[in-house]
Image (cartoon, rainbow over all chains, first blue to last red; front, side, top):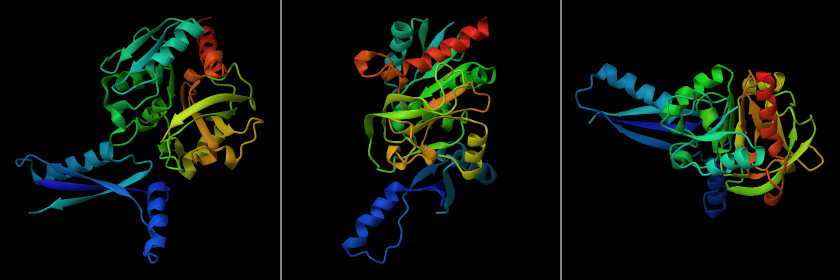
Amino acid sequence: MKATVIVTLKPTVLDPQGMTITRGVQPMGYSEVRDIRQGKYFQVELDAETSPERRQALVERLAKEVLTNPVIEEYRIVWDRS
Amino acid sequence: MKFGVVIFPGSNCDRDCYYAIEAVIGKPVSFIWHEDRSLEGFDAVILPGGFSYGDYLRTGALAKFSPVMQALGEFAAKGGLVIGICNGFQILTESGLLPGALLRNVSRKYICKFLHIRVENAATPFTNRLRVGQTLHIPIGHGDGNFFADAETLKRLEGNGQVAFRYSDAAGQVTPEANPNGSIGNIAGIVNAAGNVLGMMPHPDRSSEELLGSVDGKMIFESMVNALSGARA
């Protein structure tokens, strides 16, 4: 079972890298691009035997305690159902 | 009185800190391995600069899982002095011993240079040899030193006098031009609510000897010695 954890800066936190990309592409034929925010994602693979309830809780905890810094970031979990 | 300097995989200012305490300040000091689980016998612990765990995930993020950090939390809760310098500051915010976070510099560049910081609170165990408004000539060397805290946390920090240092010009004026990395409120260093944990991006370890271009940083270590001597008297 796989989960993807997408981590982004909170909307209120300045993203200098995203800003630079935005300003870089706008004059290069992407004038309609209003804003780009950079983030990261993690592919998490779990033991096949892990129960669905435990799975959810485990990845939530991993995202909260390790993969994000709650002061500046937020996350979203996408489960691979295949 | 005994100082300890923690070595994480990727620390690179550990010897600078050790040297500053041993040779410049003249106090007993020893290294603490990141896998150590006890801080018995230490009065002050330094988290040095560097790139612990290669800055993987986020700066300072993986160091919080080192066994020594559990002991450090207990050490700090009991009132032991903890100073985190540069990557040490990042580790302290990631582990929750200090509020806020350190983001990528607004310029996105790694900045290594001497600058000035203004003393904002001279009543901490790290600043008792200094006076409010005094400026220190001190170097920075970081890519992620942009201090951030949400509005509520910032209000609390300011209200409690937890801001220890701000980036300023040589005359002590806190201006946008003097802010090297975009830190909110020009904040260069903060203490926890109890006052016994300090995090700062500038390097007192790299400004404790004339040979290095400044001795201003030495006064921070001397303040700690002062505080510890007082506690023992």
